[in-house]
Every structure is written in C-alpha cells, then in structure tokens.
Image (cartoon, rainbow, N blue to C red; front, side, top):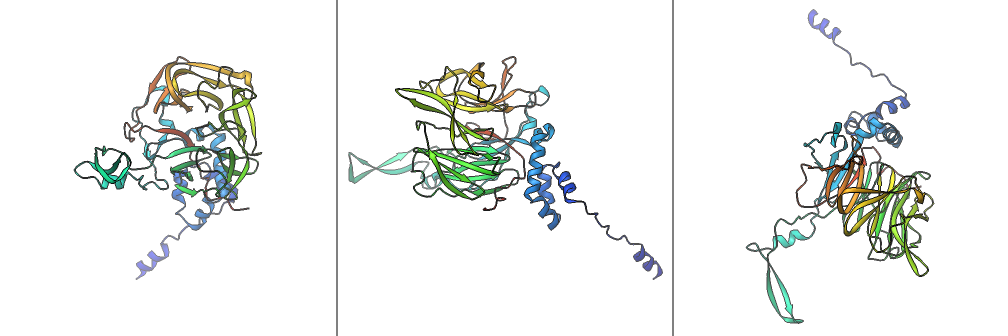
Length: 409
C-alpha cells in the first residue's frame, strides 16, 4: 500500500504549455509549410482558430513571396489533363541536373468525378460499338441505324481549364462555364456564382483572375460579346464595369502581372487595324493600351505570357515559329527584346525559371527546360500523368489563403 501511495505521489503531472503572444505564434507558424499547418489544425480548437485566421494567411503569404528559400520551397506547377496534378518546383532541374524521377501528384478538386457525358454513351455500347439513328435526306419517318466504332480509351472526365493563379488560389473551370476558386494546398474551394442573366450573352468569352492590392480583393474578369464584368470575392457578386474597347477576337485567358490582367488584342485605328496589349487594372477596373512589339501585326495570332516577372508576347496557333519578345521594362515599348530559340513551336507558354535558372516552358503540350544562355533544351518526363492526353500548365504557391475567408462588406 505504501509503494502504491508513493507511486501515485510521484506520477508526472501534465505540463502546462506556456502561452506565447499571438504575434510570436504567428511569426513561428508563418515559417512552416502548409501541409504541417493543416495537420496542426487538429491539435486543439485554439490552434484551429489561429491557423484559420486570415492574419496568419497574410503573414504566411508575405514571408513566402519575400523569402527566396520559402518561395522556392512553396512553389508548385499545376497541370491539367482531364484531371489536376501538382508537381514540386524544387525537383525541376535541381542542382543543374535533370532529375528523371519527377512525379506528379493527383489533386482532389471540385466536380472531379462528374462525368463528361461520354459515360452514358459508353454504357450504351454493345459488342464494342455504338448504335444511333440517322435520317437520310431529311426523312425522319424511316431512320437508319448506324454503327459507330468509338474508342473506349476516351477519357470520361471533363477537361479542367486553368484560368489563372494568384497567391495560392487557382481559378479553374472543371465544367463548361462553371468556375471555382480553388486552393490546391488546403483543398478549399468556392463556387463562383454565375453572372446575372443579361450581363454577358451566351457565346464567346474569356477570363482573367488576380488580386486587387488596394482593395484587398480577389477578382475574376469576364470578357464576352463586347462586355466586361468583374466578380469580387469580397462582395461575392458580379458587376458590369465597361464595354470591351477592342475587336472581339481574344481566345486565351488573360495574364496577371503587377495587379493588371493582360491580353493581346486588335485595335481599329481608323481604316487600319493594329495590335496592342490590353491592360486591365484590377484596382481601377479600366483598360489602358500598352505598345506591342513593332513586328507584331494582325496577320498572325499572338498571346501574352510572363517569364521571370517580365511581360512576353508569343506566337499562337499559326505555323511554326522560333522566336518571342520580352518587355524588359514594364510599360516601355522600346524595351521589347526579341529572343530566338533553337526550337520551333506552334503554342508556347512560359511558366517560370527552374532551380538552375533554366526557363520552364509548356511547348505544344510538353514540358521542357530551356537554357537561355546556350540555347540548349531538354524535355521533361513526368510520371503520374497519362501519356498522349495533352495538358496545360500553370504555377501556384502553397499558401493558407482561403477562397471562403472573405466576408461580404
């Protein structure tokens, strides 16, 4: 009995965790990766509240973009190919060598398992063929049964359009005219409501996505049929802001740089038609014209991109080309510099500079690293993505920014 009493007296008492000032806790937590912080949410209600606080999300983001080490560790490449995949930035071209063990991780995202309509067709197939009715010469009274040999390798998932990326949020369209703001790191998402009927007529439309620094707001810009409307995450609503003052021939999503969405557009100048870069300010919600390279004209199709913080103009869809232009000083037309490549492309999108300062490019649906100093390049093989399906790519940061963290004001 005495031994038992002594054991009870000597049993350890649960140590109290000292309370630290909130600013110190934020400073510590903002240095940790998002994956760890998401796990720490389960520790207690206090930790859940602290890690879910928008103040920590802003501090964490600020440290990410201001610290080269954190920025490199938290950067990712997102790839769309009838699915969404994430690729670690640091594994690309590490230490100047090609790491052949690049592996893409499959992401969970909204409407991922929604079939694209081919599932029902494939379910109705018999003996490896589909049968449908077809009327000959407009005679609907006596339809003819037609046997179709449909390949069963057709992907049953919808293609996911990546419309833009900013501060860890990616604007995606996993179904036609169905937009979400999605954080791949925390798996949070928000369905963007459809614009009110009459805002933008059905038909041609393109999008842009970015952050309004002055008003602390994430915005989606929709351009269609001569009308421009803007969705505000802070108010969770759409507004018509202006008419589109250019020719409606834009086919690509806008490119974000310096708080502005950019498109390559045609501009009717009297009897002539010339190309300019349309720059839409997310703060002021107005367009301004930026000069295009002198050689750019309406006889070819061009798009804009961003490489290493500089605006680019690239050929798109028309024949093979081996050059593009970089605006070395933002907004200054005389700073356009032509770069000639040692390979040709039809469509090309600059993504980022890899660890060894090589340019990571999406060239005609393939990833490659291009050395801008010696004009050498090498294609990347990424495991985990089905071959032959094509893809589009963008980059994003691992952050705590929540698409549901903005309140209506």
